Image (cartoon, rainbow, N blue to C red; front, side, top):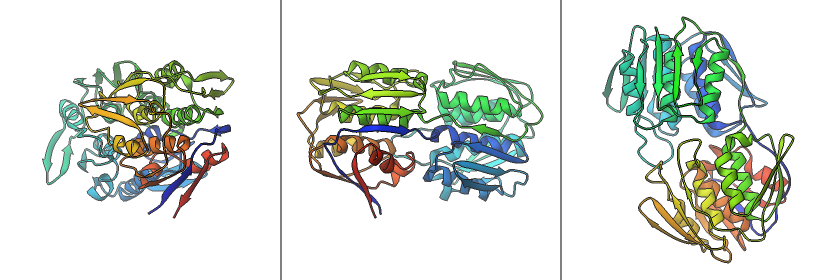
Length: 416
């Protein structure tokens, strides 16, 4: 199993280019199910999750090829309507085949999802929405089995905003009979990107990016030819890496309009962030200032940056309160940061972080995707050597992160 070794204490400098967004490309791949023909998706990051989704789509009978950050998906023929446990257990986003399969074929059988162990994340809202659209759904032996001759438009209210729920039902509604309205819908940029991609295929969608999305169903969608947005969480992670190392880094390709909450908070901590043309210039201070954060659905502070910000606050002046309001089990990185000398106490959904003078390198273990990123960020600033185990989590969401950091001067390498 690969490990990442970091010798900390180097100020990062130089330029890094952001890859396409993992959380945008996965729903785009499943959106291709709605068409029959050759689909092209560009600016695709070469990640473990992308390959897992590709293998799942190949299992359904589609042709899948990824080369030079471009996917070719041939969706003329469907040979299976089942997403087996072996695929879905490793990646929660696999459940996104449910809506499009049901809309195109009238049937779908999908294993209940797995993925990062950061909380229950039930999919009851997906099921509720599809049932309102006329689907017959049963749960049996760990599988969701759904059927519908043709889905019908409906008004669906989400008790809480759900990104994958919004995406699944938006795809299903694109081929439904009549109008579907999704209320209290997720507003994340990846949801907007999916809506734009569906519109390019011929879908009739209004309101994406707001809490109310209206979808007028159509009879047919053409194949997809689309370029994925840049990854806002990778962008923010490199902002954090520059900040914690007192670095001076140019980040190319990130979209600051997707990261207003993160940029506002990082500025509060004393970091200089300036946009110049298509680049963000990030300069870290000699000493970070403590700030409080609370994760919220977009446009609030993203839960996917909570762990990386905790690493920053571990060596900031003062005490910060970090409240996790999205997932109930997303503080597993705390124990590993404490191994590096961080002073953190957790009570319920809030972590109190007292900034220490410095962190010390240590052997640590990644427990999920963003936790692994936080340990990389912490290791970049720590005295001595940090060795991060279970970096397969990192490979699920960051394309060639050690190579990109090495280009910025970091002493980082992958150990086989």
